[in-house]
Structures are given as C-alpha cells and as structure tokens.
Length: 490
Image 1 (cartoon, helix red, strand yellow):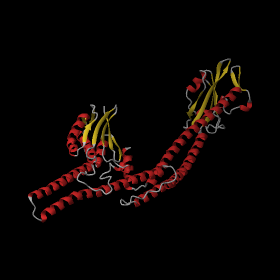
Image 2 (cartoon, rainbow, N blue to C red):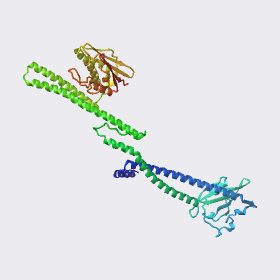
Image 3 (cartoon, rainbow, N blue to C red):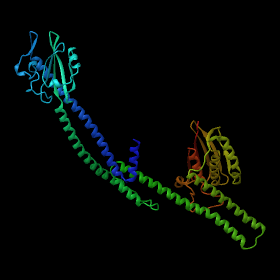
Image 4 (cartoon, one colour):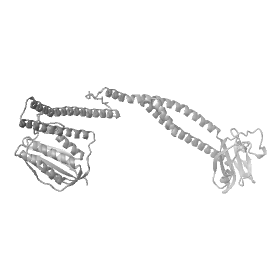
C-alpha cells in the first residue's frame, strides 16, 4: 500500500496533472467504484433470485411426482403414466438409450423410509449427494442445496418426504443442473462489463467537460487578478451573478483587495507623514545651527540656541521611539507582559507624575474616584497609555481649566476615564483621531506644545492589545472625554 502511494506521488510530480484533469479522474474513479459495488450487489441479488426460482420449480416438481406415486402391497408405482420418468424403474437402470448427462437427463431419485434405493434416473447416479439430503427430510424438514456431479458440474438438489398417516413413507429427491443459470449470469457479467466500460468512458469525458465549464469563472477571476498590480489596487474582479462558490470567491478576493488597498493607502500616508514629521525637527535643528554659525555669538545666545536644539532633539527622539513601537506592533514583535497590576495604585502614581505639567499650564488635575482593582496586563504599557491620555488632555486644555480622572469598576471590566474642559474636537474629526499623525488642524501647524501625532494611536494599540476598547465623546469649546474599557480576568 505504501509503495502504491509512493508511485502515485511520483507520477503526480512527473506528470503535470491540471486541477481539471484531477477532478475528472476522481469523479471517474468514484463512479467506477460505485458502478462496481452496484454490479456486485445486483449480481448477487440476481443469482439468489434465480436459485430461489429453481428451488420453487424443484419443490413443485417433487410435489407433482409425489402426487403420482401409489403404495400397493408395499410397492410404490406411478399412478399417472404420463408422468413416467425414464430410468426410474430399477429393472431398466443403466440402459444406454437413456442419457446420463446432468445437463440433459432427468434428475430424480426415490428412496424408502430406511434410505434404501427404490429407483433413480441414470443422470442422478452421477451426483455426489450428501447423507443429510436423506436424513434431514426423514426428520421432517425438507433439504435443498447445491451438489456436484462427477464431472464437477453444479446441480441444485431438493429433497422431501412422502408421508402416509403421518409417517414417512419415502424420500423424493429432484435435481436440476445450474449450467444454464451460470451461462446466463456469465452473459450478464460480460454485458455489464461492456456497458460499464462505455459508461465510464462517457463519465470521464463528461466530467472533464463539466469541470472545464465549472472552472471557467475561476479562470476569468485568475486572469483579472493577475492584471491587478500592487500599484493599482482599485480594480476589482467581476462577481458572478449566481450565488455559488465562485461568487463567494470573487467577493472574498474583492474584500481582500479592499483591505490591501486600505492598508497600502494607510502605509503611504504613514510614510509621508513620518517623513514630514522627521523633516521638521531636523530642519529646525539645522537652521538654528546655521544661524548660530554665521557670526560670533555671546554665551547667552549660544545657550538659547543649544536649548532650542536640545528641545527639538528630545522631540525627535520621542518621535522615533513612537514610530519604532508602532512598527514593532504592526509586525507582531512587541512583547506584552501578563502580570498582576493594581490599577488604582498605578493611576495614582501616573497622575502624580503629570501634576507638574498641569501645574505649569495652570490646569487643575484631580482624581474623582479610585476604587481598588486588580487586572492582568503589561504595567509599562498601561503607564504609557495613561500618560499619553493625560498629556493629550493637558495640552489641549486652556489655562485655568481642569482635567479629571475617574475609575469605575463592575463585574467584568474597569473603565478608566479622562475628562477635560479643553478646546474639544469637531464631530467630523472624531472618527480619525486615533489615526497616526492625524491632527484636527487642517493646516497641520506644529507648535511648541504639540505632540508627535502618535500619542492616541499608541493608546488605541495598547488598549487593543489588552483586549479592551476605547471611546471618545467631545464638544467644541466644552472639552473631551476618553473612556478606556479593560476586561478583568478572573
């Protein structure tokens, strides 16, 4: 079996079978097996039916012979001369004029209640009848079965008793050659093989043709898909009107192309935005250095230039760190710890660190409620998420405003809430605020207090990695509210 599998594998590798040809071959093989099983079942059923018909004929024949036998002074004779069987009389047994061939001669034997032969036809003499064919009928049960002749020909034999006053009087055995039945069955097998071969050839050709028609839409989809280049993802494969597997494949390919198109567009926008953001601090640093080098400056002027360069360098470093974090997240290389974290203690520490920035901008930072809660997560990433939200709220809140932190706990999740009284976000900008480098200001003007444009993107990424979600609501001139939902793992 193993060698056959290796042979088939070698054959498939050496001969380039197309999927259409493979499908037609499998259909033909399956139909051949089904046809073979059907033929075997039909053959066995027909053979048993014909044998049952022979048994019925033998039973009727034995009954006819029994009704013609007469017992007179201990001698059994035929009552109806028209039913006289040639050779049944022992006196003429062995006459050469009577055929002894089982295919031509009459097969009848008559025995008494003790199994003594009363008479038999010459053809019956060639049969190898078992003793049970005599003893079983004498016990009250008819016997039937297949026996062989001296020439190894099969004969169907039926034995029954002749009774008088409830007592067995004689045993009548009647036989019939199965040569005609076997010849009929052989002819049937030959006819089935011829018809089966014709049907299999027709099935192979029909399967190959139907497979070609079935794969025609797939070929069209493949040709259309091959024309779509990486730089032109706006084309779509045609969708067949019939709701079948081809339509599902076409819709799947189109959804994949939509996803790729969106991904490439987002990547191009990300690269363009990253180039813009990286170019700005580099340009500022270069301009400050060029201005300082044009002529001699006082130590105080050099100090001011170096402070500006240091601030831009710090911003550039933060931007590179954020870009690296997001790139690792996109590639699945960022490692997240799964450790027990006291979220209330963590919030208290983060708010304490952000108070200095809030104090510089004359903004009141407070915690409303802080119930104790523990969850599983990455402590460093959670701190980064909270700091980014607080930094965003403080940056876009006018002096004299307030930022409020709240923590709500229920059975399945915790809600970390950051609410401010800042400038707010217009409704048309809310769906895009978690996109990388997105700013609500269309002019994209960068100020000294502005961030890298990646803070909220990193927040959304960290929350998603913790199997949570984030939502935002805002009104222009009244402030914004960010709600982070984090699941509690028991």
